[in-house]
Length: 268
Image 1 (spheres, rainbow, N blue to C red):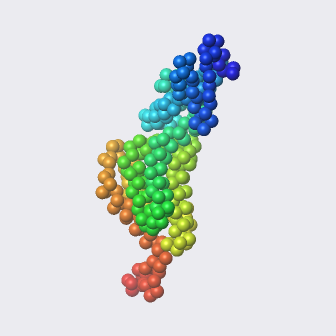
Image 2: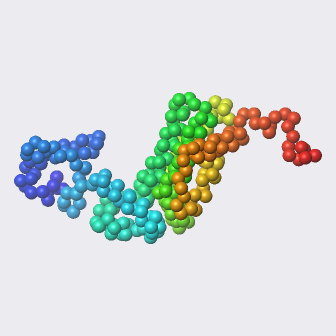
Image 3: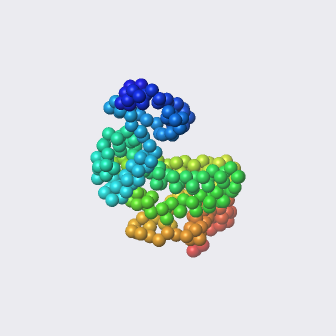
């Protein structure tokens, strides 16, 4: 109760707090019986402070903008707090370290969009679709992020530029692409067990498939303001990646058929 000492005695007489464990929300009941819903308060320096989702979101958006404008290294916690107009201690209550803030930015502007692609994988698995169908649906969603998401593309540039001087690249990969690779790996493992494709190293195969997708749009990261690609343009790209990937993994690829000749034999 020490954290309520800053409130006057008269206020404490009518203040009743009911903690909702599941939502971590507080309800403050006024003398008139009107309930106010607020985010969870916390104690600092003997006074009551309130942490809000809106404030957290503002910090994440500003940090992403500063990463783009100043770069990762130049975006310090001091600069972020200065731009926010608050104290550094307030910023640290939301994000104890800069690493925590980087992960939050990645999850907001990169991983959140990857979730659509991951959802397509999970839906396809649940519906029992073929590997080809699942990969096609996944590929179209993944290409939307890589090709058309300007914020994700901009952050990717910043992170790659700073990866050699800090651990920001590792933080980015673990918070975003690694999750997508993990789901792809599970899908490929399942396809191997069902005999849809030849036995392969699933993690390597997952990386190879994403590389085939990225190869068709990777040049856009070097362009300042590339135009968005329409769904009608993305689907053929996804189909090409899927066909190329599966052609090398079919149980009985044509190149392995009995009596086939290699390039040198045919030339002779």
